[in-house]
Image (cartoon, rainbow, N blue to C red; front, side):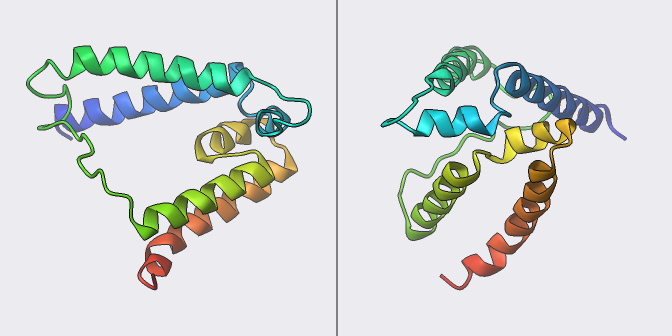
Length: 143
């Protein structure tokens, strides 16, 4: 295995661990907290807004420094999104994601981090989520 590939795998693992720990420590693996954020007419919980704001701030600052480098440490080029259009697939995906997030209180990252708690609802949700991810591309061709 090349040093670049090993570095890429190690950095991906480290990033995933830090992200998962951040989701757990901030309470984002707690579905009641997420649904509390979405319940603006009831017992609104602003915690998610602070977590998202913190993530945006760190990303904004990080991009300013990282993109000054000619290349990333473990890749030949930066993978920066270039599309700016809003198409039907994006809208349908956003609606499905938002609906599922609101109904269940999980999005993919916190759901995977939440597996460590062993809750039956999470153990059911994650395989169904993976099935949906696997079906997304074939079903997307039908659009």
